[in-house]
Length: 631
Ligand code: BES
Ligand code: ZN
Image (cartoon, rainbow, N blue to C red):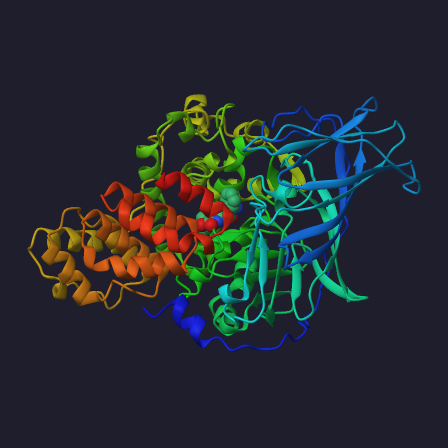
């Protein structure tokens, strides 16, 4: 294993002047008409009156100001009124300063300033922005600027980048941070097309989740002609270079990691092919990936046409590329067919985890796919066992969900995935694959609920084969807590022998050097470390460490799995490298649990001491989460 080492990579980075990215723009995507329809308001995380008025297009004209760390400019919103009586439009904002609002006439030519009202600030939801509209108005125009503390934006100083010369900005709008970037109806129930004009300092390249900007009169123009929910609006600005993988897939990254990323992700075209074969054409034109700075708080984010990725995936051996399969799969499950509220998050993440695994199986075979299922199931069991509120282990989440963050546990991902595996098993692949393909097609560019899916399942699969499953079985999966006993139990010989070696080692039947690891992939390592019995002696931890050089290992996943064990077992020799890891990686999946485990295992002082140094480099989303963990 010779893998990701931020410090090392940072040191190797060559400062390079900005060079324009030229790459073909195959625009196979067509403009989709956005038609507002009457929907019942069922998303408690928005102020928007989207049952009455719906945004159909958003145009942003923004200046990216790195000195003040703000976006400032004008958002123009086109809307439709499913309720013709509606006389106001309510938008979501958070930490936005609104300076003026104007409303247009029918043809959008005459603009009239109006008196708008900002609602009371709420810690989760932010502030509503209520704009009065006349009966014939079709657009509103809002002048505003963001806050340097906007949770959806991370502003990096040049010193925090690999190149060290230019600053960097990137956004993260999911779940409800689009409202910290622009005034919108910040609910996945509403879809809109968008366009943007960005002014950025010279030498920096802006990118968005859209057709990649033409430079016109010193400004970059972007266009997203397909209707998307607000959480898929995305922006990145930095000293970013491009490398093509094929004619419509490529990688953006800072120079230091560009070649490595293009190599790591070179099988993306095969993933797209496998996905297309199963579920129909890729509908978004280009598919590019951007490798962000290490503080990106997720493994990946499915921003349309441009997935955002953590550099911790660049392991050197393609062992972590299931995250690419995952973000790409969202182009069908999530971006094309979207959960209408965060209570239905499993429709995005569970479907995507299922599709991801099918693609991994198509490319790399059943052995790897099953290993990934088994690792995922372990994580699910851990989350289910640790759930404080059992209702959070239902696929359909309860009405009183506190924060959308609470929807993104392994339940949405893995229980959702295993539910679809269960359906596949009961109806057979020959029926289930075309069924899923039709589900994506029939609901393309729509936002849907769990109940929509269940109804569609009954009408299109269950009706033809009523004995395949019972109502009770279905209920257990969707509306009841825990893991149903109809869940698959993936079997992997490779993992069985790995786990047994771990057991024999812990029982002192064998020593570390008896464990033959030469042919292990990252997956075997993760299973070995994940199932290692707790309470090894200090001598045993040291023996493992000395034999396999685990502390400081370059694969972020392996390092994380090992550090979790060493924290539980108080093998303190790993602490300096844990410190190093926490200082150089901002991916939430790793750092939340590491800080949590340190605190639980009487290392709160150490955790706080590291966090005091690391915090300012973390993304605002991560800061909020870790503040809560350590408080
Ligand atoms: N959409 C999620 C990331 C996300 C979830 C952002 C919730 C904001 C709120 C993305 O598709 C995802 O699931 N990423 C995973 C990778 C995946 C392979 C499980 C991650 O970041 O680890
Ligand atoms: Zn996802």
